[in-house]
Every structure is written in C-alpha cells, then in structure tokens.
Length: 338
Image (tube, rainbow, N blue to C red; front, side, top):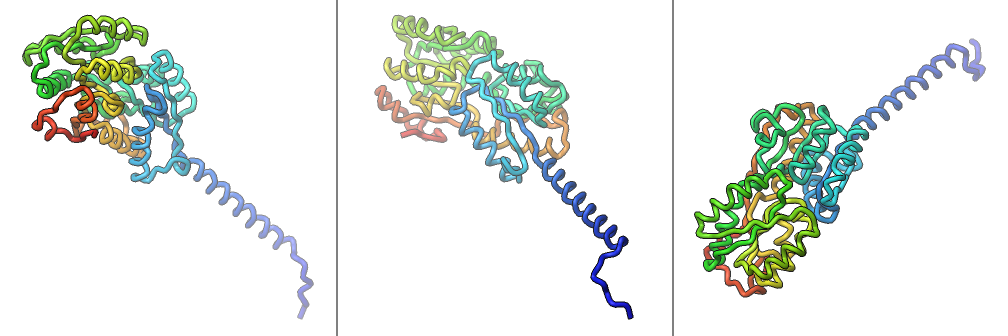
C-alpha cells in the first residue's frame, strides 16, 4: 500500500480552486442582493425641516410597520424648500438625478407640479394636494389617476365655509372677518368666489387681504389695525403657513378670534383649526409607497380623500383673549390644548 505523501495533486488543487471561486461568486451575488434591497425614496417638503419633522416621522413609523426600515432596506433623500417656491424645480431635478424609485411630496399643488414637470416616469405620491387634483390637472380621475401621480388629497379648499361656521359658533357676536389668502395658489379662485357666498349664508361679512410675500404682512396688519375686524381666518398656503407665528402673535395682541387652514398655527397659539387629520393622512402615504415598491403602477392606485377630520381648539388662547368657548363647541373638539 502507498503511503499518503501529504501532497495535494493537480486535480485536488483544481477542485479547491473551483470551490473557492464558487464561494466567492456566491458571496458576491449575496452582497449584490443586499445592495439591491436598499430602495431609494425621495421626500420633497415645501416646509422647513422643523415643521416637517413630526409628519416625516409619522411616514417613517408607518413604513417601519410595513417592514421598511431607514438605513437597512430603504434610504430616504430629504429636501426641504422652506416655503421658497424657486427651490422646487431644482430639488425635483436633483431627486430625479439621484434615481430615486418614488418621490413623496408634502405641501400642496405647486411642489407636486414641479416634480411632475421633472419626471413623467418616477412615481409621485402626494401627501395632500389641497385642491381637487382633477380640476388642477394633476390626474385624470380620483379613481384611476393615470400617469405617475397618486396619493392623498386633503381638500383644504373645500373647508373654508366650515371653518367660518365653527368660528361663528365659538363667537356668536362675530360679524366681520378678515381673510388672509395668497392669490398665487390654485385654491385662490375658490377662496375669492365661494367663500363670500358661504360667509353671507352665515350672516358674516368678509374682506379678503392678499398675501404674496412676507413683506405684505406688515401692510396688512397696519390696515387691520384701522379696520378692527371681529375675527381672522388665515387660509392654507405656503406663504401664510411660513409666517404662521407672525399671524398668531398679531391675533393674540389684538385679541382676535382666529381660525386657520394649517394645524401648526394652532399648536403655536392660534385659536382654532378644522381640517384633515394630517397624522392619519401621512400614515396612509406609507401604504402607497409599499404598493409601488412591490410593483403597482401609481396611475392604477386611486387617490384617497381624508378619512378623518379634526377640530382642534386652543383653550389657553381662548382664555388669553377673553373668549369663553361654548360647551357645545368644546364637546365636538377632537383635541383641546390647555
């Protein structure tokens, strides 16, 4: 019998080499699969980072519940326009260059349109388009949007009459209301045409004040000092939302009952907000992201309207301006800030 010399023959060397190669290829393939599992999502907000923080966190939490964890299997590219419209096209183009798979847009029609102008192929999920997306030309229909835009519409333009009604119920002596609005946003026509009619039905007289840029506020505030209205309604727009604290401070100083189209203003000291429950709406965005990442086409995903509306009353502010909120109004509030 021949003794084993301890040497590996040529055939054995070849087998070992092939085995090592197969292992290397396997590890390489697995590594590539790991890389492919990272899905890139763009997130364009019309607001600043601080204002958007809570809403963005809600989206991340809802995505996590669906199995998408930032830094593990998804990467989110955030861009904050800070209320500056000229940033939308650049940020939209930048997200397209980054080849994200989906772009979530927060902040109304104008940033959504900017992203839509930048890409006809990347799915766009809106977290609240404000006005009717069909009338605004974003989609073909709510049931079947077509194209690359889908998501949630918050119907902010349709709620002006309801906000005035709730303000009137809270302030029975209310007659004259100053309405701040941005004539450059798509819902402006609805504010100008429909709101005066709705106000008259409530026995109210409104006066519209244009807010285009931040510098307009001082002129409007000076005029309101002379006009001395009974109440104030700040309609939803980015220009107005970006200056929400200034409006709240003015209303408090003048002891004006105020209602808002943006929830953040009431958290900052405004009296009242009525509108879509944004926390709920943002959570629902995650479902769109999930379905699109799994292969659904945005044009086939129906656009959802708000499932929940909320009335938020700042009771601390009411006391500060000497306004007793009627019990029947307080009883209907979804949240009372004390």
